[in-house]
Length: 373
Image 1 (cartoon, rainbow, N blue to C red):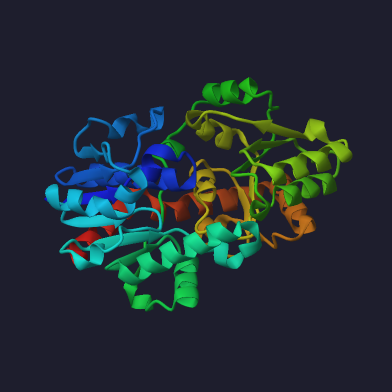
Image 2 (image 1 turned 180 degrees about the vertical axis):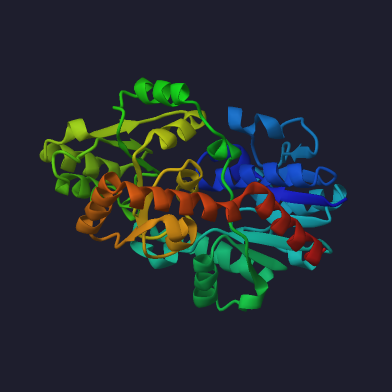
């Protein structure tokens, strides 16, 4: 039995990438090794259906700072609690470990998801970049082992921080088991109809930010011939960039072809399975979890030929230059009209995505814990 502590701030308070990673990993670990104790340290707890399973359910134990300053506690004061609770190994799930932890007897692991702020600094505020750079660099230099969620991220850690590659383990992400569970045609049709979508549609899932390239998808949609132009369902939120995309759509008078929807997480698998093609031509990702969600659902995927996305998509994905609306449009045309190509890529994707299956990823992480401890 191992008593493991986790920085669970994102697990309880983030409901996109970092939170999904934390909840999925902890859920997988608890199934694979229920004899361990998983202590979740969080400055606060946001009540949400996705976090209920971690509250008051063994083998999870939740710890908060009580009346202490939450920021100080998470960054440094937590060390006393880790000793009090008999923690044998600490895992920072999102780029950080407590200051000075390396001077204690508790070994540590840190997961680095991406260094996108180094690749695209203009998309981040100056102060945010400084904070990220200091925290990430500190964690990489003081953790006993670094987990990179892709070979692409590992290469960035080596390039930007000069870390020895032998100090970095690539352990991919898995996605929520709901994406690999079959859905009835009736359930799929019900969810699709709920959001006013037709029987055939294209799908994008992700934050609506410049790097993720939604505008290029819309431009690719414009290039499709009228008989192949399917509506695009957009699942995600954004700020300034979303306004820019919406303004472009309005200026081109193509509002009927783009549907912005906000489904609950439990409905996403049905939306994936109902889609004709999934589109994710992001310019840069640490991994690209929506890609493996789509592959698990048996949907043909168009994604980028850069960054980590070829790793996530594998041989079944149609890879494109993310800067080319023409390339994206051409991929859509082939996957909508060539049934043989579509079937072959779907089957290849279903086979490839098994390497990200929950038990596989959990066993790799447990093996790393054992090696360090």
